[in-house]
Amino acid sequence: MSKTLGFIGATIGSGIGWWLGEHVGMMTAFFLAVIGTAAGIYAARRISASLM
Image 1 (tube, rainbow, N blue to C red):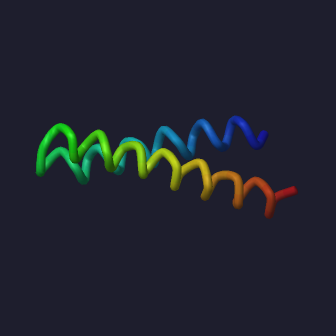
Image 2 (tube, helix red, strand yellow; image 1 turned 90 degrees about the horizontal axis):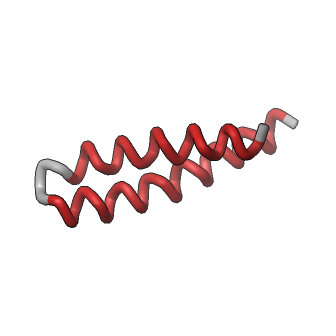
């Protein structure tokens, strides 16, 4: 369950980061996608821990 939620969180976080950064440029979009991936995994693991 934790890994599945982590994958979903990474996907959503990456998409949000890319969407925010694409207005500035390609490298900004990539950088924010990486940050969004990490934040999504962190949030998903916190949610997973609170559910168990």
